[in-house]
Image (cartoon, rainbow, N blue to C red; front, side, top):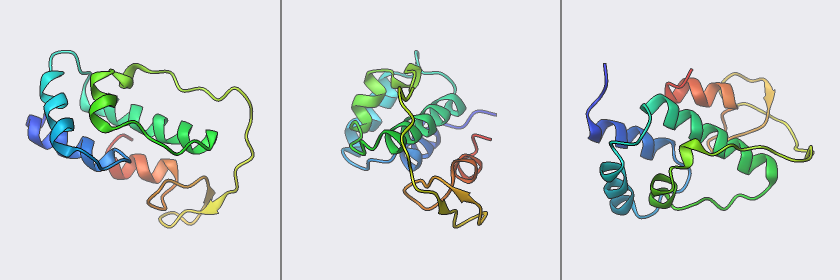
Length: 116
């Protein structure tokens, strides 16, 4: 069952790594309702975006409203070359993995966000 638009925005906001201009992001969320894919796809795209940024070493994120208006859920994130990244123990599952900003590996983060 789909949640209300407010509930979906709150889940988007919780998942998105840059917490700035929440009002502008909410306005963008409302305006793109007709073209946005299901929330699970949006959350999966955010996970790929974060993973891409972490892997590439460029940790500056788009403002959330920009990400929404630009329909970045449809972006393809690929890394052209293999970049060595240190692995750290995930705080949730205790396995060696690449970390998210909240200390969870990608699998634990996606399960936490309801993507998996």
